[in-house]
Image (cartoon, rainbow, N blue to C red; front, side):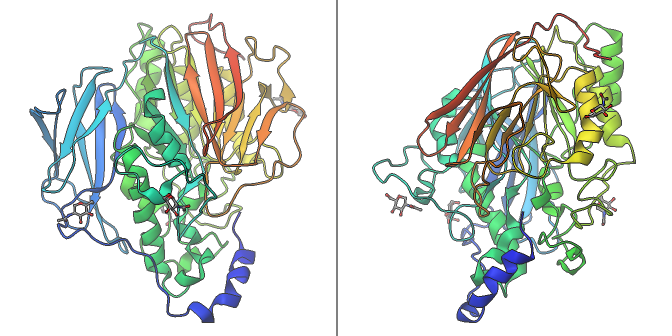
Length: 499
Ligand SMILES: *[C@@H]1O[C@H](CO)[C@@H](O)[C@H](O)[C@H]1NC(C)=O
Ligand SMILES: *[C@@H]1O[C@H](CO)[C@@H](O)[C@H](O)[C@H]1NC(C)=O
Ligand SMILES: *[C@@H]1O[C@H](CO)[C@@H](O)[C@H](O)[C@H]1NC(C)=O
Ligand SMILES: *[C@@H]1O[C@H](CO)[C@@H](O)[C@H](O)[C@H]1NC(C)=O
């Protein structure tokens, strides 16, 4: 939770490093070289490819196909966006009509790009087991971010992972690439607004903010170029610094979620057309599609899972980062009043459990957490809908450690425990690593099942079958399994309505 006290800590070293500046990455000599490559699920049979270049492009294109030696298909777009203070342009190209669950290869058109690969999305209703990773609060690594003590006996085996990333969560995500199909990252990406914590940046804040974004998305690219990387906003995306009521001083382009919006608006899906045979599902899914506001709130379906990404920062009553919010970050709104909650209700109401038995909702700020700071306005806005429509698992971050809670509603543990509860199970997976460090576990609510803050860690969610969901927490540096639990749900009702 950065505040003025961080600034105070940095001030004594001001003069010693007055000549230091932001650590902007070197530009490639060929300015059309794609950097910061990221892919996402953008529709039922569609993948979006996003990347940045240091040059505006008239016609960004991607060649792709199911054989690395014959990239016979080609897709292009005409959009090349940027914003004030950004050094780069943002591109998105859609690869549509993909054969589901099939390995594809692609190459962004440039003299200096590499062939990457991905697995195309599973169709809704495919009951094949698969796993995803939940990483929240992951920031830049290195001179503008965090570093770790590590075991020098292990080396990088995957090409493109810079050696300096040795044993971070990103390295683990690369090493375990065969174990999961995509990544969700609901909020706090990069920590560009924490540039002020490094004295060398103090007189070059505008560039330092951009430098951190360029570095972070570059560090992530070896993973995000191959695994769909699905995001929603956190408080660190809001403004150039997290000092309340100062965002008016931020340079143009560094307030009101600008980088987040420019980077991900075209990348994220909206909400899928229902494949259910029931009319009520189709009607509600169409309504959700109209109300979705990617990348702030949206949903998608993948195999056995219906996954919703929500915005805990703005766009609901007393939202913390809203214009009058408690964080003083003066951001949003990004929709009409009521739009986000109306979206969530229509979206959850559309879920046919015979198609997608598992419903996961992911957002940034938790209302169940150890230590201080549950988000009460978030709980008031979202929890009743989670319970009413039988959300199986809530995934959150914001608190920098790993936590798991037994199914709980309105502060009371569900007496069924992990055996077919009505209430959602909740996890926090915010211990992945960032410049602010880990948060101590602190006081544990009575329904706490696991809490860990000794080292960087993250969660893997395994969709085993239509009734068993396994959540595993791993230590990032070693891959040690820290906690494993299985939630059993009968999923007997086609449409869940708990009241
Ligand atoms: C090719 O790409 C690499 C990686 O982005 C970059 O370091 C290098 O400078 C590029 N080469 C040219 C000629 O631009
Ligand atoms: C990562 O490993 C390399 C090679 O062993 C080493 O030179 C480097 O200092 C390590 N980086 C960090 C941040 O520990
Ligand atoms: C933030 O951006 C949104 C979307 O462009 C806009 O509607 C809203 O008014 C902006 N909020 C502030 C405080 O500038
Ligand atoms: C939630 O719990 C509080 C007390 O802890 C109670 O006053 C309130 O009525 C409960 N709300 C619901 C919807 O059950």
